[in-house]
Amino acid sequence: MQSQDKQMPIMEHLIELRNRLTWAVLALFITFGICYFFVEDIYGFLVRPLAEAMGPGENRRMIYTALTEVFFTYVKVSFFAACFLSAPVFLGQLWAFVAPGLYKNERSAFYPFLFATPVLFAAGGALVYYFIMPLAWTFFLSFETSGAGTGGMAIQLEAKVGEYLSLVMKLIFAFGLSFQLPVLLTLMARAGIVTAESLAKRRKYAVVIAFVMAAIMTPPDLISQVGLAIPIVILYEISIVMARLAERKRARREAEEEAEEAAEQAETTKNASDDGVDAQAAAAASMHETDTKPETKSSSDSSALPDTSKGTDRDEDDFNNAR
Image 1 (cartoon, rainbow, N blue to C red):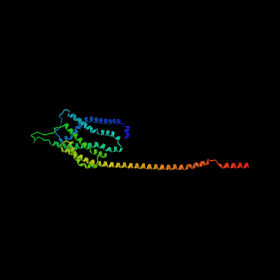
Image 2: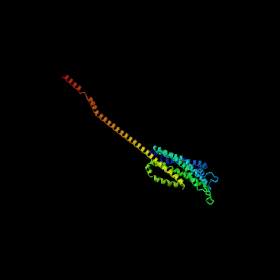
Image 3: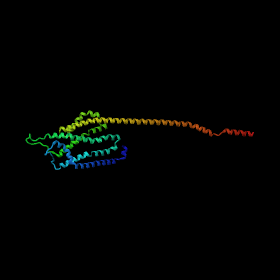
Image 4: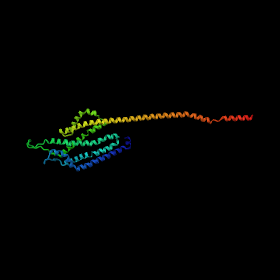
C-alpha cells in the first residue's frame, strides 16, 4: 500500500475518485431518463396492490389536487427507480476505487457483501410489496362505509397520487434498508468492533429497538409495524450466526498467519545457524592455512641457502696441490 501511495499521489487519487463518481452519476441520469420514459408502467406496478385491495369498480380512481402534483410525483418515482437500478453501477465504481488499496484477503472478504447488499434490498422491497402492502391496504379500506348507518353519508377512499406513491416508496426504502442489518453487523464483527457474544447479550434491547424503529419508519398501523419489526428481529438473529462464522474465519486466518510467521522465524534462525557454522568452518580453514605456511617457507628458505659442502672440498684440493 505504501508503494501504491508513492506511485499514485493525492491528486491522482482525487482524479480517480472524480472519474468514478462521474460514471456513477452518468449511469444514474441514463437510468432516470429510461425510467421516466416508462414511468406510467412503473406507476401501474406500484399502484397494483391498492387496485387489487379495492377490487373492481367504476368509481375507483386516484386524484391529485395540485397542478404540478402528478409531474413531480412522476419525477420522484423515476428517480427512486433509477437509484435502485443504478445501484450495481454505483457499487461497482465504489469497489473499483477502494479495491486497489485492499489486501487480497480483504478483497475476498468483501466480495460476498458487495453482491448481498442489492439482493437483500430487493428482498426487503419484495416483502413489503407482496406481503405487507396487501394486508395494510385491506385493513385501511375496511373503514369505508356505504352510508347506511351514518345518516346517508358514505365514507369512501379518494387516494391522492402523490401521497400514495410517497408512502409506497417510503415503505420499500425502509424495508430494504432494514434488510442490510446482517451486512452491517457482519462487517463490524469482521473488523472486531462487535462480537457474537455481545450481540447475543443485547438481544432484548435489540427487540425493543426494532419495534421502535418499525413504528417510526412505517405508517401508524399495527400490520406494517409488526411486519417490519419481526423481519428485523429475524435478521438480527441471522447476524449473530454470521458474526460467529466471521469470528471463526478471523481466528483461523490469524492462526495461519501466526504459523507462517513462526515458520519464517524458524527458517531465519536455521539460516543464521547455518551461516554461523559456515563462518566457523571458514575460520578453521584459514587457521589451518596459517599453520602450514611457515613450514613451506622454511623448506623454501633451506633450499635457497648455498651448498657449503662443495666449497669445503675445493679448499682441501687446493691445499693438497700447494703441498
